Image (cartoon, rainbow, N blue to C red; front, side):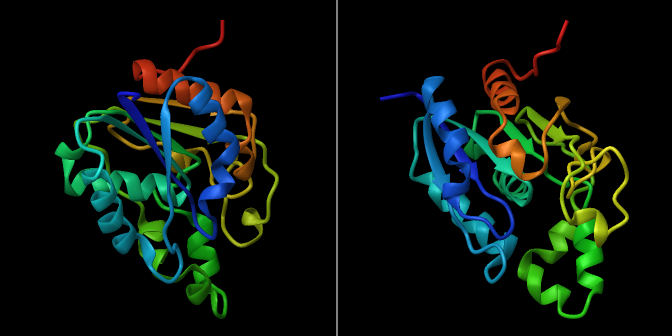
Length: 209
């Protein structure tokens, strides 16, 4: 049995199967991989955090890593803030608006927008102030500006069509890198997957020569 497990946490409006390509690449790198699913709109981040902690408790005596896409990265960090001793692994946030999302704030201002984002609105609106946990955390941002996000929020460049690079930068991060991918494209990018694996192994991203 593999001693290291990666828990994948999806983003808003998504399901676990959307991370299938990333899962296959992590499994090929030797990790045991589990997908964590939650109701991002009707359940929200708080409920997801509680369920994620329960899930981790079932994986005793294992080194557990977390890889979260977008909202999923915030959920993973909130879980570790609440119970820092549950994991001795690393965390990678893919396109996560760690400082809060301008797009989420823009959508919330539209008629019915708050309902569309649901119970995850608050964490997406505000993000977190800084990371002070014991686990190394790395953030990967995309810089291909293709998506509808810039139409509803003041999205600063560079961005991935939904989240700006600046929104992924958080005080306390161990490392940060930018890859040529859109927000959803981060899940399919071979370069992003390679950076995830590098961080899980050594708590650092690979720098190009």
